[in-house]
Length: 429
Image (cartoon, rainbow, N blue to C red):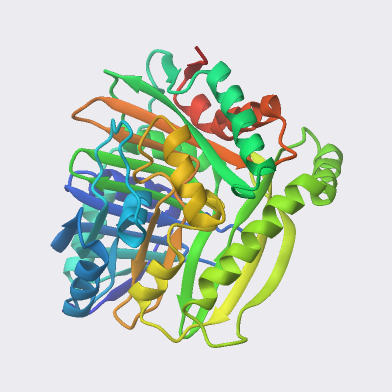
């Protein structure tokens, strides 16, 4: 394995842009950008780029066992993703809905190039002089950002009328005691359209500045993600999960936004949603943790982002299981299912009209010593360049107190940043 070299940068933002443009010439790319988000006690890597695969694993069956073997074999950090539909391997479930994107269920790779920026320092997993040659190659890239041509028309996979009707049906099931809360999602999509994925990510990331943003390329499949949510992190023996439940728009002034944050903080419905998922996360972490170690460090705190305000809780514990088993025990994340988890996942499949795939899944990395950090794939544009298929998926928690029209407006609010960057109009059918 090559030694690493650290160099100073005086053109950090320009270098980040050009590095992603350079990386996109390779068939496999994974970028993580925390955007120096200030309001998080458990910070991610500041900026981390993995490019080109030395070795890789692609799975649609027996994925977790294969991942254990791959992680044990590779003596370096591995990067990749877990699809939401790995739920079918964990539980006796299935996914039969339409899939326009065709991402695999699981993909991880050992990277040829790893570039990490912290402050004004760039570390590359290469020796001198190769690091300096690579830096100059990146700096020579052109970095003009163009506007998305033509307005896109995004169709609603589930019509507004049907969506509203389904919310009422879900509420009736909650009233009947079938479950307590369901994360119900919709897809807005465009067919026969082309997308410059790098430019789209750069614009969306600049607009959102989310703490768990990532760009992923696997051959002809792209994820452009500006997620505000962490699924699970492991530091030594400590596990950290930070589920989100509760959303309100940003204000047009500091005063208005402070008032909106206070409104969200006191909203009984939003707090109930968040607390239900916190209980589910506590149970999920307990399956991998020392008895009595699960703690709620933050409950229903309101975090401010560029586009919205969100209610976030932080749950921690001390793990005593292997990294992959720990992930499996908590997957998929409760914030994207509801409670109780297995029952709502069965019902989600009946109400939704699309296969979630990578949406509601997770992108992240495992270090060779067993630490890891994974996001929740939300606030994302997914794109298959061969199929020319563009997809935005958004959803929200349905509880007995949900109002159908409000739930529809919430998913439009969550889609707004992506819609603007795509220069798109949404047809609700």
